[in-house]
Length: 220
Image (cartoon, rainbow, N blue to C red):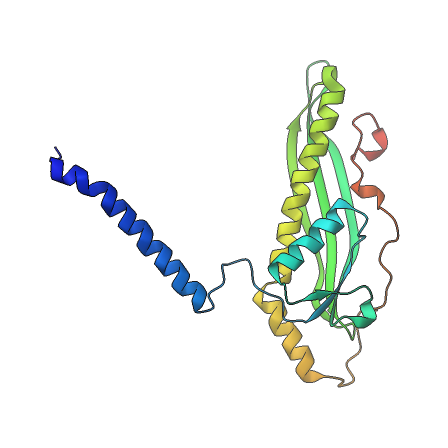
């Protein structure tokens, strides 16, 4: 049972608590505190070897600028301290269940994206890494057109997840350590693993097109 006095103080206590939380957040921000997952990258210039004429390429660049605003995205790998190289990107559409009539009831959608991050000398900051995302989707062959739109929407959501995972990997503490150690070593005769001037894909890669549920070529 609450008294009238207790009821009148409850909203006030709530506002005081909110005010204290806000003051703490502002204090942490003033001290240089950064929210987890938004760690700036250690290099001043970065070349993104992902086609910029794709939604994925645009999303990657937007996310990198937001996470590390002091890192300039340059147009040539020759001008970059670090280079993001796209190794491969593949989409898949696989049948996972059939009904009693042998018709597809559920598909599995997949994205497998492989990348590497190297410095200007071709030394690996992040060796070849594959990020995989899979989602299952119910399917009704009576409404093919609607399901095709659903597939496209689901792939776009998976792509946003992929961008977030790529960003977290590139801003991880071990990447900063690898870059700083490579800078300290300088030119010590170490043999580069990769070519920093390797060209990026020139056109929209076929794997990023929405798979068709009527094309057996993309089923595995």
